[in-house]
Image (cartoon, rainbow, N blue to C red):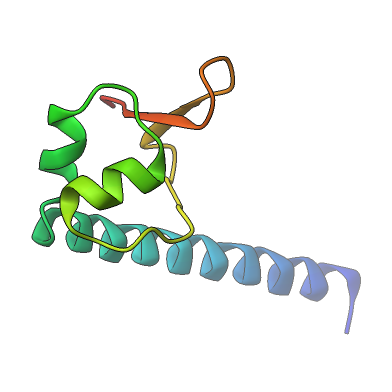
Length: 84
């Protein structure tokens, strides 16, 4: 394999990973919408993920925001929704 061919493979792999990340973000967004999570987050002040989950009637789980949330280090583990 030449250096040129290897670079093409690396670019393809990077693009494929980006596509998969975007697809997962879209799926998580759909789940957040269908469970009413985003409606709850809109109505709450800055809150912890545990509090948000309790109010939404969901179990707290590892959060993945995809840059759609702002985490505040100054006020604890608060999260607020962010407009694009």
